[in-house]
Image (spheres, rainbow, N blue to C red):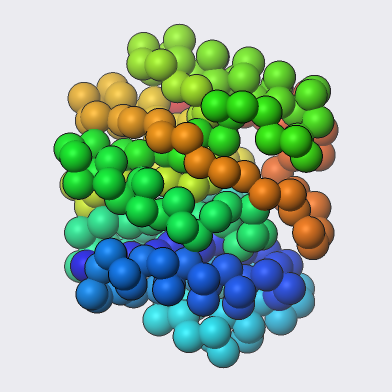
Amino acid sequence: MLALLITAKNEENTVGRVLEAFRESAESHFRKLEAIVVDDGSDDATTEVARRAGASHVLQSGGLGLAQSFQLGVDAALGVGAATIVHTDADGQYDPSDIHVLLRELDSGADLAIGNRLWQRPPHMPPSRYLANVALSKVVSVISRVAVPDSQSGYRAFSAQLAESVRISSKFTYTQEQIIRAAGMGFRITHPPISFEERRFGASRLVVSPADYGYRVVRDLMKI
C-alpha cells in the first residue's frame, strides 16, 4: 500500500487540486492508497478543503513546523501499514506525473528517491536561490558522504523500512536530515530529475531569503 503524504500551511487555493492530481497519478501505480494531509497550523480553510477533496486522514500539527509535521505524517503512514510513502508539498510546484519516476527508483532497489529539481536551473528560480540550493546540496554531500544534487527537494519517495529507521528531530526542515541519517545507515539513495513549476499562490514558508534559509539549515545540520 502507498501512503501519499502532503504537508500544507495556508494553501487552501492549491491543496485540493494537488491532492486530487497526485491521487489520480498514484492510483495507476498502486491499487490501495491512503492520502494523508498534515496541516501545519493554517489560519485559512486548508483543512476543510483537504477533507472535501477526499483525504483519508487530515492531521493538524499545531504549528510545530514543517519538519515535525512531516514526521507526524510519516508516523500516520506507518500506522496504516504503508509499504511506500511519497511526500510532496501542497503548493502545486511538483508534477504529479513524476510520482512514477520516483516509484520506479524504489522498484529498482532504492530506499529513498529524491526528485532532483536542479539538474537544470528552473526558469522561475532566481539565480541567487539556485546557487544557494546547489551550495547547500554540496554541504550535505560532504556531511553524508554521498553525492546529493538537490538536498532541499520536497518531492521524495521512500520505503517503510527507511521511515521506521530514520526519525526527524529538526524543527525547521526535514529534507537534509533524512538524507544524512539514511546515508549513515547505509540506505540506497537516488536522485532522478523532475520538473519544478512556478508557485502560483502564496510564498514559501521556509525561504525568507537564501541567506536566512542557509543559516538556519546549517545551524540544524551542526546539531545533527
